Amino acid sequence: MSQLRCLCLGMVLTFPTLLYAGQIYGSVISAGRGLPGAGIAIHCGGAITQGSTATDGSYRINVPQQGQCSLTLSGYPGSPNAAVFSYPNPSQYDFELVRLPDGRYELLKK
Image (cartoon, rainbow, N blue to C red):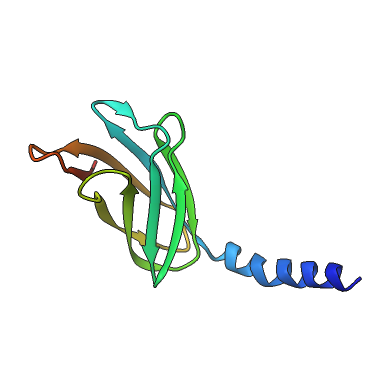
């Protein structure tokens, strides 16, 4: 019975956080195509929320913190990143991953 109470308490405490979480969504393309399976980390308010792109390059990540954040693609030279904002309402950010002449990558907002 004690485990059930802990589980219920955990759900009650977590639900309001998810309720007020900002959702950041959009797509990442490279060379005109969606970028599948790209790791995404959103750094916001000292916390990191991770996710990845779907097979078509789309992503949807719930970020509990609000305010200015940094979205970074993992696994690419140059750690391509861009500023994003987390609000109570969903925010859309579409990006293009561009390879620079020196081999590093950069994220451009579309």
